[in-house]
Image (cartoon, rainbow, N blue to C red):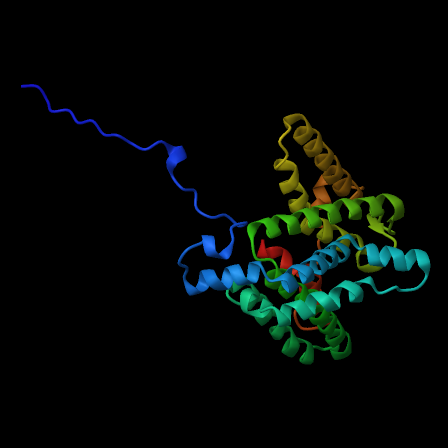
Length: 282
C-alpha cells in the first residue's frame, strides 16, 4: 500500500517582514509594551545622545591618561575631565541614567562595594590616608560606572564604547613608548600619574587589553588580524620581560603585592585594583 504524500507550499523568505529596525519610526513599530516604549524613548532622547558623546570622550581621557600626560608636559592642569565629565554626569541624572544603570546587578554590587569601603576607611589604622583613597575612588572611579551604564542604551553604542576604550589602550601604549622609565628594580613604568608604579601600570594594561583584543578579533581581514595579534603578543612579552628582568618568567607570578586588610594598604589594594568598575559592565 503506497504511503500518502503531502505537498506543502512555503513562502519565500523574502516575503516575510523583517520588522522595524532601530531606524524605524514610532508609528511603524506597532503595539508595544511599557518597557519597549521606555527603551525607544531613551534611545531617541536627543539630550541623552549629546551627553553620551561627552561620556565617550570622558572614558577615552580617563582610560588613556591623556590628561595626566598634558599636565606633565604643560606644567599645569587644564581639567579636561571636568569639561566632559560635568555634562555626562548631568545627563545621567536628567535622562534617567540611574534607573537604567540600577536595573542590572553589577552596578548594585559595585555601589555596595564602594559603600563598604567607607566603614573600612573609618576603622583603618591610618584613617587619614584611607579616607583620601576612598574619597578619590568614589568621586573619580565609581562615578564612571553610572556614566557608562546610564548613558549607553543599545548594542551599537556599547560597541562604540568598546572602540573608544581600545583607542585609549593604543594611546596608553604610545605614552609608554614616549615616557617609559625603569624603577630601582628594573621594572617598566610611566614617569607620571597614577601608573607611575610598575604594578599599577601592569594592572591598567590588564584592564584595557581585552577591549583591544576584541577589536582585533572583529577585523574581517585574516592577515590584518594575525598581524595585530602578533603585535599584542609582542607587547605582552615585553611587559613581562620588564616586569621581572632578573628571573623573568619564574618571578612573574610573584610580582603582585598583597596588603593586610587592617590598615590603609588594604584600602589602597581594593581601590587600585578595582579602579575601573565601568569596564565590568561589558
